[in-house]
Image (cartoon, rainbow, N blue to C red; front, side, top):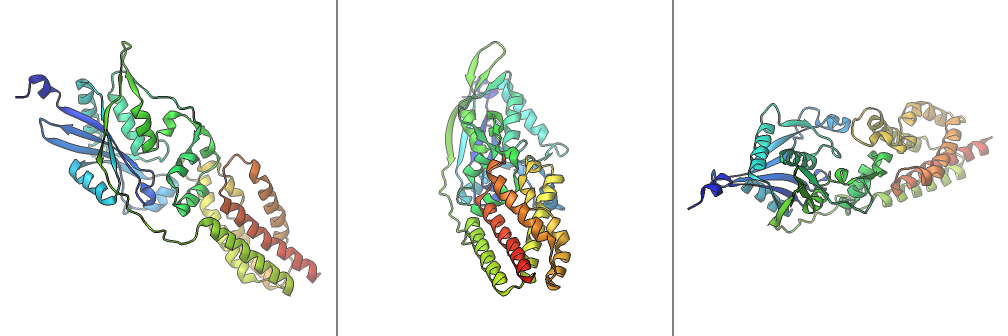
Length: 375
């Protein structure tokens, strides 16, 4: 027979950490809270990472930083099966909470799940599925959670790169969007935006009550899904660096042909500066209008901005009429300046960007040489 005390405290909460998947939204892993009530035979997972691609204007709202996520609740067995089929392991850290704290956390989670409360504005560094789970746990505790310190300096970008190894195009795309603020050192609390950093710090954390007594935050850790990762072949066989190197070589060849034949190929200018301008529109939109963190400090706006797109009709007209275009004079100086300052700007720049800038510079300089020969 179960004693009264056992019946009274038959609740267990655990922090769940799921290993990364292969989709871009799952590369960093996932965090959830498991709720077990043995007397009521309940076993649920509270998941703050629910979203829908079919939501109205999802892509626009995501780029602008206005994506809404919500708290979802699943039966543990279905949650476990989903991650097993996906090939992602799940680690369970049983929380060392008192009965009063468990009741408080239970009330918080059930209140959060009310239709009017379950939706929240997602922020991938400061308010995501991991930080939400951490914050609800902290709210339920009578005292303070003290996390271990870290001697290693970390930045947002460094942590992102740890989880994008082997996914070169995803890493390249993220690097294009993140600005200089992503390369500043961040503290332990900020590092916990990452599920596996949260798991690490929770393992060494302790609860300090008002009377000075301490107890570990985590009682024990188990592997509740021990899955074999499902490998995925790259959808594109070449890396961004290889493609950027090819781009540079193509520009060198076209530049040589233009100089040799004393002729400007306006079709290549159309492709080149149309691509640069469209890329620049995306970077500029993030820089000026998005509320995502760190994107408004992106030095790449010096290279990728909409100006080439706006000037393109005049450039093509001058190319066809074989007129000298001062754009290429200014562009040659500008690109040279950009390449020279790359080592000193306070932002980590992907090597592919340097190769792209060199390709653009080759094209601009070839125009100047052709103008000189025509003269």
